[in-house]
Image 1 (spheres, rainbow, N blue to C red):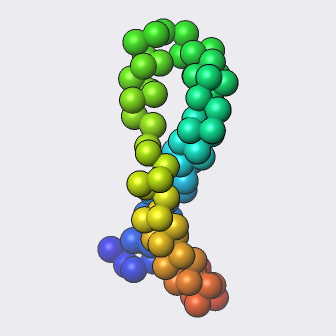
Image 2 (cartoon, rainbow, N blue to C red; image 1 turned 180 degrees about the vertical axis):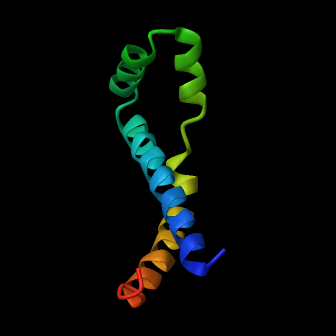
Length: 83
């Protein structure tokens, strides 16, 4: 696998994790409102509870996501002509 392919996979992973962190920070700030939205989306209490249990702890996950993202941004910035 070429380096660029690895970086593209890493980018996809970071975008997915960023989406999860978005839910995480919203849930930490507005737990009742976000729980209502989750319930409306799933309509199954068991699935709702499973989803809520899987929400990442923002304060433990953000820094690693940010650091990894920064490395990737620097890489793409330096290689924008080859992408």
